[in-house]
Length: 126
Image (cartoon, rainbow, N blue to C red; front, side, top):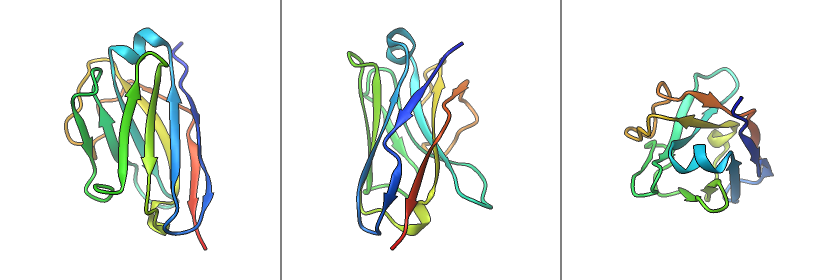
């Protein structure tokens, strides 16, 4: 019922940058926490970041702090993940996810999410 549309993935060299976008219905996005979760081949899923409905609370996994920035534009119904200084270990499928209860605590957690996007591939390789 709820469709999340992701874009921005691709292939970049180490040290490069990408910006991921996640778009959903304006109402759902405006009143929900949005998170990014990634899964690398052979590894468990890892919460990357989350942002609450107002944008006043943002949290990040320790592995991406200082390199990734999450933001949202509720008018455009879009959440962004700016990824800088990318490392090969950042290679993963990145999923946009929605928590309708608007909980954004530990950025590394993903158990609270209710809806998931299709995922977009990020590959960091020389």
